[in-house]
Length: 461
Image 1 (cartoon, rainbow, N blue to C red):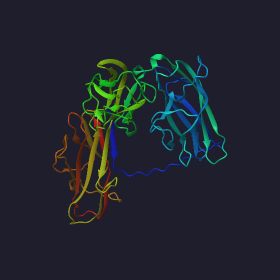
Image 2: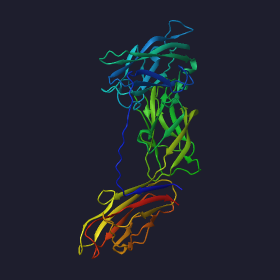
Image 3: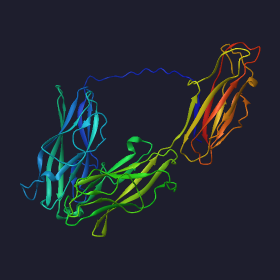
Image 4: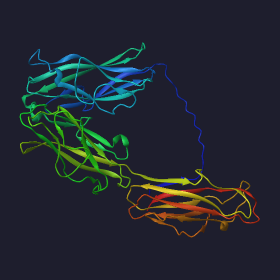
């Protein structure tokens, strides 16, 4: 049985951390292909691939990363024929943490030299993700194109040596790659899974990169449909969270979705011009809205993408949709005086009853009943150990707006031991209630400060 315990005790922790630092400075650059392997390979079946650059540095020197074409992409079967501007790159927005990407987040031709990334002034280590694509048109000569690009990290205004890494590139082009059949879908990681985490702001959204021909003999539409409801591993359908989809700004085609709720009814996401002209690429962004009462778990479904030309539909691809809602089961304790003690100070005879309030809030999405228990660990005593009798120290609960059940609201003596304060509703909904402690100062008891330690426990039933 999972449980959470919160005590009204103020604890000071002192920690000493010793770090041994090497004299050798770190300044390095590496890359990984998100789909694996050692060579960037594109083909009519996979027109988009991802590369993640990583800079390790502890020099404190600002740096920049430069991309260069060191061997242009040349057709092996037709020497002297180059791919040119059909080989494009974009930066994945938000993939870096500290510096700034200098490439656009839309497709741009891979030039002889481009600044990819510039660090922050402190030269903090960082990563940067790039997406490479081949955008096809009828004038591309079929064949296999091979070449090389390099990435170099340079210190800015310092004598630190630059570091260069070389990436082999191979691109296959066939006649079937031109026209509307060149439409492709891929995530920035190169896979076919859309993963969303509503509780994590950095993962509430996920992108799918769409590559298109730019020119087609017929006008076309791209459509999507959610094949079945999102269902947890326990077989429970998701009925709380909402997933929306939007499309990046377009220049030639028309957007069919803009913060539109994902549906099991087919939805048009993109429409080319009447002459078949289209954008060469766009981005579909899926976003999960955070819902506190969405039951914890992993929910799955599938999205299918279709191409429609003159009323005829063809299935292009199928992606998995995974929504991971992390478990939340937490007790928040908010004492009236914002301290982690229940205190009654400067007590004197004949003074009015003194009160101290504590608000308890439970955050839960486990869909199971729970209870909150109070445990009094000591009598109400002063520094000399003198005790105020239990009958003068009472408490009661308030929870008129609570979904669950609070204990009897009539005052009861505060005694050492455990007392159930609250039981949730059957769904284990998040809830809030209040405890009021009251003290009457009895005659014959020494004036002064009196205190007691209370622990609150949250446990599943």
